[in-house]
Length: 445
Image (cartoon, rainbow, N blue to C red):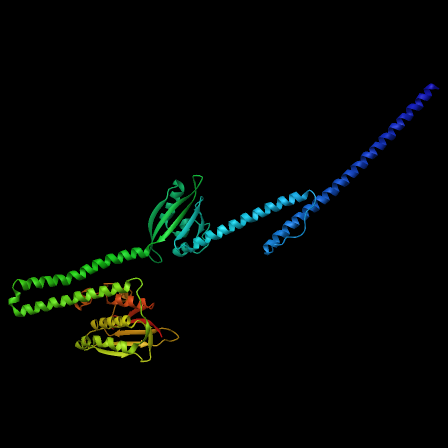
């Protein structure tokens, strides 16, 4: 009996334990389900909050891009408010830095484009990272230039080698190069390293166009040489004939008269040369004042024709004026009178006996809005190869013939400078053996 009672009791304990275990398992399951649902709800809430924060930031960017200073009213709540504040502060700082970089970039680009010298910046890889419009214009290269090698941009091996040497050694360099095509240009090139923490990270190359300076130096040398030569010939003749007279030729009246005439002729040539040099210097000086006013061309031309009429008469040259009386030009009458006189004097000198010289003026038209003045002759003409150079100082097509006719070699150069001082153009056309025509334009009143 006691044994049976103990058996029943043990079964009851086991049943209670099983029931307790079942209850515990059910509680854990319920707890797990509740915890999962809570985590899911928290994740959904967190995700929606993050989405709202991202939406706010995007709306802020769009509002700023459209120029609006107002911000969306959406605000984060709870623990995301600090994250939102941090993100907004980071966004604001980033915008400020980007704005500063944009201003700095715009400033650098503005400075580069305003500089007349060509500027090229290459990086550590030797490729162009920055260049201005003056550089592209100087070498006739189409932009963009960034990403190209220096030899592709400037097409000059010496420049590329100087940049490579500066990049490798970190030392500045200077050189002068000549660009031959399409026109001759002299360039002074300065190459300097760009350093950061003592390391060369790039090279800046500046190109100075010194073509005008070199041309002026060449003109000065030629001018000095030509003036010396032009002065030496008459001075030598004057000195020689004067010494001959002093040594006894004065006792021979016939010879003395001939020698004095030669001396006078060479003295006149010196006088004309010095006058032309002074006129040319006056026309070439900077700030030359052109006193323009309405000028009726016909009386002016007739006065110029009268000045050369005697020389033309000696050679039997017919002078003709074809200038309508109604043509009025806006010009400096004294300068244009000098231009026409020089052209007429030149035409008479190079026209054979019995020839003709004509001055005409053409009124403005649709094809040519300027007045065109022409001085034509039936002279010896000018070879085509010399037409571009006849306006150069001391340039002569036939040097011996020009000096024999008393020319100084400066008349046409004076013509060119006087016309250009008015902002107009002058040119020549000719057919060898059939005469020449010199043209220049004037502004109508």
